[in-house]
Amino acid sequence: MADRGNRIAVFGAGYVGLVTGACFAELGHRVTVRDVIPARIEALRRGEVPIFEPGLEDLLERNRERLSFTLDVAEAIDGAEFVYVAVGTPPTYSGDADLSAVWTVIDELPAVDHRVVVAMKSTVPVGTGEKVRHRLDERGLAHVGYVSNPEFTAEGTAVRDFMEPDRIVVGAFDEADGDAVEGLHRGIEAPVVRSDVASAEMIKLAANAALMTRISFINEIANVCEATGADVVKVAEGIGHDRRIGKSFLRAGVGFGGSCFPKDSLALKQLAASSGYHFQVLNAVIEVNELQKRRVIGKLKQRLGALRGKRIALLGLAFKPNTDDTREAPAFVLAGRLLAEGADVVAWDPVAHADGLHGVEQVGTVDEATRGADAVVLVTEWPELADVDWAAVAAQMRTPLFVDGRNMLDPETMRAAGFTYDGIGRAAAVER
Ligand code: UDX
View 1 (cartoon, rainbow, N blue to C red):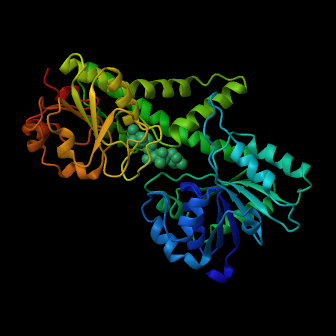
View 2: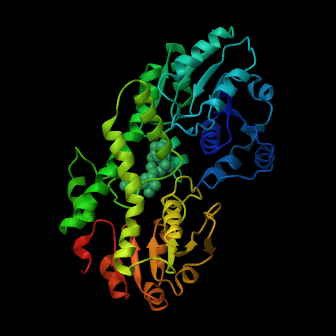
View 3: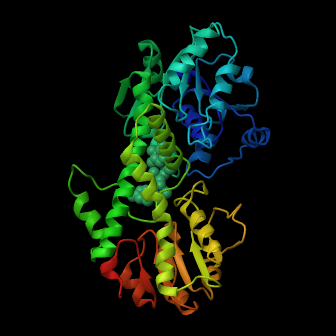
């Protein structure tokens, strides 16, 4: 495969850039990953992987001879036929996507005389491709192509999501550039959606918005279940069998977080607003998610009264299991609210850190976290929590109250273990 490979420069050694680079190397291409952080590049050259992503380390190791890492733009571009942009696009204060890192890459692109295709992996507002096209033309780089090739990789399963995607989206101004980017994915079995650039940009934003809408929808159904005595876990199962609805993304809980959903929902909201459109459903999705993160506080107060001086154990800090990522994690909002209520907050997570959560005590075991606690809140469904001796935990707590923010554990088993157990949207199972 190696001799068929193309030369690809990937700008950005974050989780998207590294996964993209490693997977393209696995497909037989020669990849140079460029970043601006010296420590990160030095670590990668030593064979260290700066992020926690299952399978990534193996992939980087296996494809060592096809991968290189550099701080130098000229070195990255030298001989490259494709330039992948995989830099961060964080929200600004207004909620718009901050594209400064994207523009830096475009403006730093040397005045190459050979044909190069710039491929956008970063999530950007609709219309960005058009603007980049103009900028390149202004710089006399009309021969440099531009393609939107968004990623749909979830953290924790990013390598699999790249190698076995549900679809590959390629939006191009020029058919030949689209063909070339599609060709890079040879070896991957998946439907390819070819479109114009704006539609490809919108596909990414709309896919995320649809997934977030499902989560906020099921969370609202959960809240109505609590008020009416139904059980959302059963309800999700019952509606999920309908093929028009489907089973996935119907897990009620303490809301979504992460590096994509919160940022991309704001970016789409702003994009719509700036184009004069009030995106009602999306606004509601965002608001429901904000309220959902705080509902646990109400549950605790209902059982414990005022939370001042109460010891609350948070199990899980990461925004979801199998990642150390705490960006926009519901646990952080919850911890902040609990501290504001005057509670003592102790947190456990197998890999994530409570960095920046001043006032939260982080401990190494579930046992330590729960000793003498007035309540436990399960925030992240880490698989190891399925194997905890919960009866022993209940026995060592001051009040054995358990709020299962992910409906991970079986209510009856937890009650048999000695807990007052409350899930999300499971009123039927809560004794009143
Ligand atoms: C997501 C998208 O899945 C991915 O396609 C996109 O490229 C980036 O954003 P990621 O943020 O890594 O990926 O995680 P994901 O597994 O989708 O979960 C996002 C959040 O939704 C988590 O906080 C998770 O706990 C929450 N979630 C997910 C629910 O609350 N209920 C569900 O049913 C599913």
